Length: 163
Image (cartoon, rainbow, N blue to C red; front, side):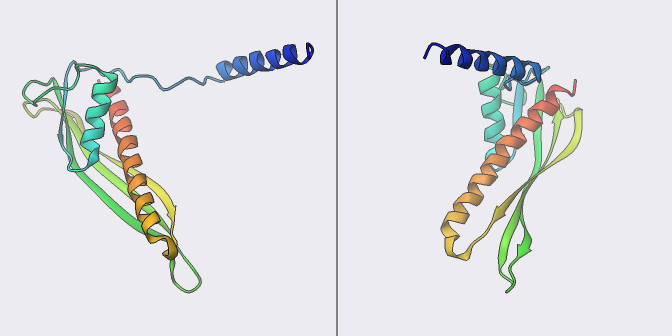
């Protein structure tokens, strides 16, 4: 029993050294170069995801209105689409690709462009089965919500590197 513990301890120590040596680190907060940011537009959950990211990572960074903000994230358009990727031998859909496209820009409250209009496209593959219609509809909504959160993080990262 005494010989097993030091061996496991060495394994843990070596694992920690290898993980630290490979450059792995937890995702931290994104440092924005603006004191206050307002989110404008976006009829779906993207605006809420951006606001949540601003509240969570940057207390006090979310401005109550565009006039009081140093910069404004303008969500110009959001589009969801579903593309058939694979069909079965009898012509039934077997796999979809869900696409989430966002166009946004970063502007000042007076309308001066800080970050030119940019487009972001996210895609997720989803298998489909006619016998599980309700479950697949719930999975589709879950994947879209995941893409909204992912888009919010990518937009925040792009804004952080813009200035």
